[in-house]
Image (tube, rainbow, N blue to C red; front, top):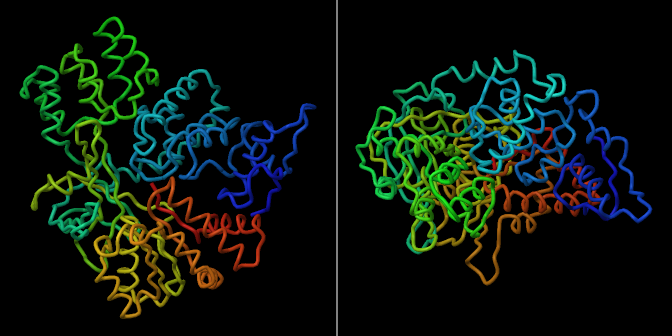
Length: 536
């Protein structure tokens, strides 16, 4: 990758952006730092080409600098400014290529622009902000000449559709799997509630590879459903769309977050201040400062005089989306079985306990022997090296360890000769060391060459995987110099950014590179596929 110059002092060299992102952002902020005479520090020709590619002449086949899970929606839209509509639609999405929408980010944008897909709410990780942005961009579709929209050729979309036709390969055509068992991974004293979940897929058409994710179609909590029915003043057997209201609420619709359509519905059936408040919420406002905490039940409690008709109420809600989890097993190590590592999400807002829909479904509500619809989402650029002799470095704190357990099982089953280094971290060593016996055995047998641990609550100061990376910087650089592939799994907004910054610092210190060169080196690792992320 060609190094791109950027205005000095505006974006620190150690900032974890690719050269294209740093060049664009530096140019953007240079406008604010310009002297009164209107002059700005110019971008290099390469940076201008990267930023403006597609803004004139309709071409946009170059880099997509916004395609980074760690960037905010605002930053992504800035990076896509001036690009054709389909590229701006792509930037509005969560950039995870997670497959929950049935596509990846780029092809979801393609089918929206080609009008092969009309649903604007499929980007589950992007949430309401992405749906609102896509709605605004979709308004341009009828006003944008086809050449400027730059929809892709029909075969590209057809290829994506063909993949969707295979049973168990996408959300639109799930297969069945049987729930086998769960066991808690935390010991007494932990503040977390994490579970190892096992499925039997032997009788289904589901197949998978390490690095893939597993899509689960959950059911809502019955207690929450019945509270909503009571707030509606309806009966659980009220007919809605050829089923009962309870069945529809359990299986078909999302009860969090709240779609704008529900606020719009409430604004139509209330009056006065309540109507104005609902209208503002439907437009993305936050009149009472509580918009981020509202779920469907909380909205009904907030507007106690609104009693929507059950059919209109169900129509206003979004479909219940499947949830994706990194697979924590190898099909070579356990044929016909598949495992997940799941944090049960529970939290309190006000005096009410909220539950993560799929996580508590798996941790509490599903019973052994139950068969549920599932699918496998193939990994996009998150897989073991083709050469089994290649060393691998895996950064997986918390449930981010899931795919690396699968990687190690696969390397053992295939007798891969490459070295393996795992960084794992959590709160407390005594109760939060997931799969401790397995990893210790792997280390004792030599499969796990190095095991580096970080515990954030064991000492007076918090200590994380990125801190352990810094401590082991010399050895980490030696592995990278040998050609090791580097993997990160877990939280995109904090952990992944901190890990990337730590790696840049390691490369600068032990790779004898300047800060700017270190950033470029890490960007090159990403582009070549040697730095891979499964972050969310």
